[in-house]
Image 1: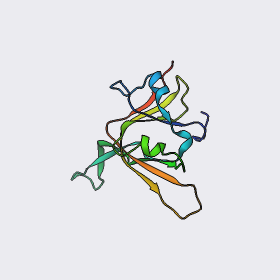
Image 2: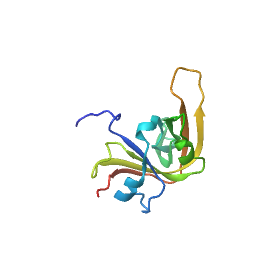
Image 3: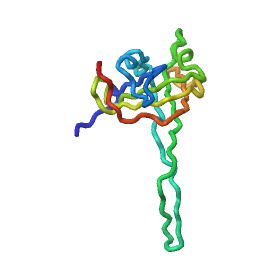
Length: 156
């Protein structure tokens, strides 16, 4: 098993539409998606979390648990802000619905590790700071349905 660094390998795209009810994009939908990888400073969330249910009983002082409902973690992408263009602010405005596609192992056809998150933009806010750092804008997403996880990147 070869280890790798996500930087330079993982690709993050945004697609306005995916026709399949399974959220598996076609090669054409992948080509039409906007690749934001180079503009991203930070990624947070984009995972499923299980809300376990405690199941204590009178026979033991140990409190066991069973799996409960799944829910998406709070998710956001932090972008570098452009001093002339407002692409992020326009394309990912509050209320925008689409799909965040994360190709964890790259986006070459037939590569495993593609996650597709159906989302609605919850907020888009500039991070104002007096620190010595590049200007950034954080876009928070509500994941609106169960994501497709660990799929194969579609081929041509």
